[in-house]
Image (cartoon, rainbow, N blue to C red):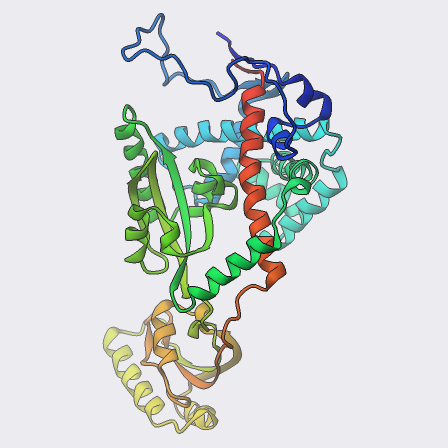
Length: 452
């Protein structure tokens, strides 16, 4: 059985190669083909009677988008990338939901590639290949050839990844041509934003990741259950960025749900309350808000226009000992006590190597470590430690015992915040992203899609 959605694109829009969004940006008055407009109220009865049966659980992952086929193989190969990113820890039920989300993403990707081609700004093959090589070397530390073998091993392919890259490049080309030239930020808007930022100096701001799932009164229970399952997967080690890209229905899905640095006042009250009690690295949710549910992940937090102590550059010496294989707990405890006593007697960083040699300990120095790059427990300890002092011993029988000695600390300069040009760029990016979502919505609405 084939179901079709077919809405003819506006004649003027097709002629100019622009969507309704871009035309709106140009303030061009266009009479829509549909007399009631794109946002006319729908005549839906309170108690509808269904004619015929439609089982939402029976789905086939094949679609034809404006004549171009997305096959089940395309879906499975893209799905394999996500499964691999999550360490293969995805339950069967979750996998099926993810599969359908991948299909929706492939449909969007196809529409973006098609629109770029129609607008004569397709992704260049050389761009795709160079980006693929960069992803292989920078993200995976492999050559393109080794990357291809890895993709095959996990059930994906180089072609699948290159298609995703092609879609992203094509979309950026479209935005540069059809959206960015028509986004204008006035100097007055930028000055007002900078004044608001200065007025909020010293207040806390948060870098938050969000996964938003839209819900209605009718499907609220089911969406909440789905959100709870996503939280469970994330707590088991799932990638928040991967889940946000696949599941979130917010405009930030394409960037892994990252809202950037924001203040709590910018969030709905329900989310502000949840975020205010979170520590970096924590999850919260699902939190019910207007229109659905949100899952939050606190990436980091800081004070506006205030130096963050965690940006201090530390000079450290690590002093450590290892336990021979077969060491018992009793032997390890005795050796660790001897190690702790020796470390306590060290008189500053210059004395570290001499004292360490007495007990066969190893000393490694590093003077380019940012405090924020260390585990949270060590950050607090080291930032409150006087120069020349050590942390308490930590470790295990398998890893050995070690301490960190603070040999120097360069405190960060007071943050000055973004300058005028940087603030304008941020505001432009935000406006472009919002219009990009409308652009994609228009493409979906005007598409001819067949599900087989």
